[in-house]
Amino acid sequence: NVPEIGSPARTKAILNRYRLVAKKSLGQNFLSDLNILRNIVTAADVTADDNVIEIGPGIGALTEQLARKARKVVAFEIDANLLPVLDDTLMDYDNVKIINQDILKANLPEVIRDEFEPGHPVKLVANLPYYITTPILMGVLQSNVSFDQIVVMMQAEVADRLVAVPGTKAYGSLSLVMQYRAHVEVAFDVPRSAFIPQPNVDSAIIRLTPREPLPVMPYDDKALFGFVKGCFAHRRKSLWNNLQGIFGKQPEVRERIQTVLQRVDISQQLRPERLTLINFIELVNAFHDEGL
Ligand code: SAM
Image (cartoon, rainbow, N blue to C red; front, side, top):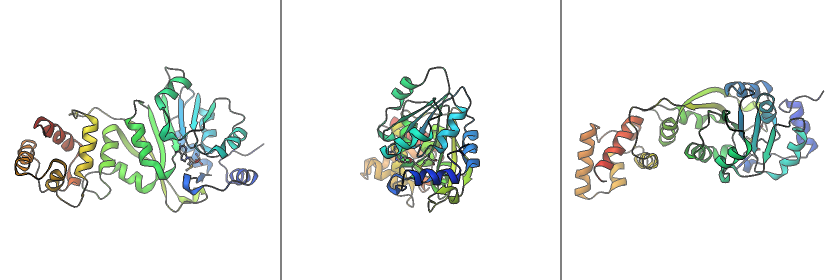
């Protein structure tokens, strides 16, 4: 009876057997705590009806727990050295497919169409490579794929930014883009001691579920994201300063910026971190109406 992949003993045995040295540059920290692995699968409420995309299966610890519950698991792994390892560790699971590709270059809609039978929920569950957490999440949320559920592990500091509310230090464009796209919550925290090798940060599991419709929508998503980014270009400066950074400082432009701010009733002296998502949406729409 072989212990499960995510047990510390088996993880160490696999690393020894294949003489694997975790690659820091690829964010390789292997989660080896069966309780946490199972809790991740539970947080995503994975059932036999679900198709699952995983990013970075590593040696297969999370993949194994997913494969036990899901209909099918498709996992993207960039490191070709791990392919023979995964072939071996996941040998008993015929509902797993590993794709040797950089997730940032993957065509997710196409893979989902080709690999999954339609009519089943599609979920994303992963212990993300931390060096590309933000590009992965941005890419996923801006792609045409609508996941029924996303449950991902990331470093605690980034998780804090995702769930941050206005007026806090962690609040910024990342919080706004994520909260515009989804309902975001921390499912639970994970200590660094749960990994081999241990990273030098703690982690958290974030759950993203489809959000309730907003009372106002921006005229264009990308315009909203660009606008929010511009407003946070200098987060310690006032909204007024940042808006001039976006639209220009000419007297005529400044006058029009003031007109817009009066129209939406937002003080130019506020710092961008005071504005809510709705404020940003109203603002970007108002500037668009003004022709700026
Ligand atoms: N899922 C495993 C676990 O929980 O123990 C490993 C997680 S480890 C934090 C991140 C994994 O992502 C590594 O296996 C790494 O090789 C892989 N990875 C790194 N960059 C990637 C990329 N651009 N595309 C796909 N996988 C990547």
